[in-house]
Image (cartoon, rainbow, N blue to C red; front, side, top):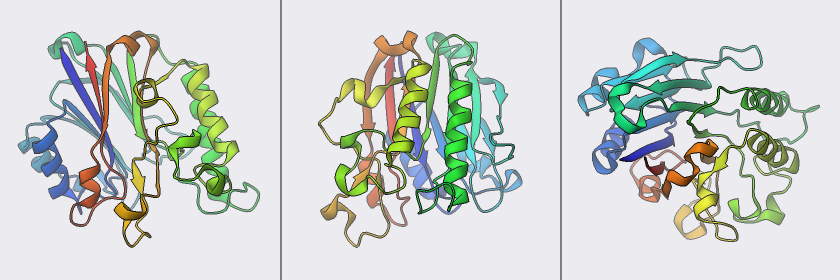
Length: 269
């Protein structure tokens, strides 16, 4: 059974609902996990998304920022939202695929939006950076305690952990998202919980992989100064099922785009 799950920081689901529907029509993933929906629950565009064939939707949002959602062709059971850093920030949502999903049944899906961390990589000078590091520390503690069984973790983790996950390792070492304290934190929490980084499983370094290109670039395609901030991890029992990880770069060039591109993981279950 071919199973696909896409992660996409949409940067406002209402502003970019046409792009979401366009992507769903073009790519038809089994599951789409969104981050930064920037939408309170009572304004979430549920009708439009269900009309596109995704009847099973779980979401957690708030006005103006953050927000996560899971859209699925399969039933979703045991939905959960975890708070981090004692904040109800709508930065995590999870669900388990129901038995009607066939071979995919029982897989736990986790959708995360890790804090960006502001511009100054110093926790004493920048509360946003301190929050990011604290969030990663709590994610590390959770990752080591997660329930055994098949699981997928996706989302905008806001860290480009490896040298070739950024356009210039040397120039970005003191830039938030690629500083050593962040990259070490992310790789440590991933390794301790035995999560498999599927993109690098299939495409090892030194090949470059980017999922995000800044709005600040006047010609993002020509400059191609990207970072790999969006990730798809699987538990060890799913490692042998990983077949493809694809960055849908075209979406970055659509009208009024998100600065992130969708990333689709394909498993053969």
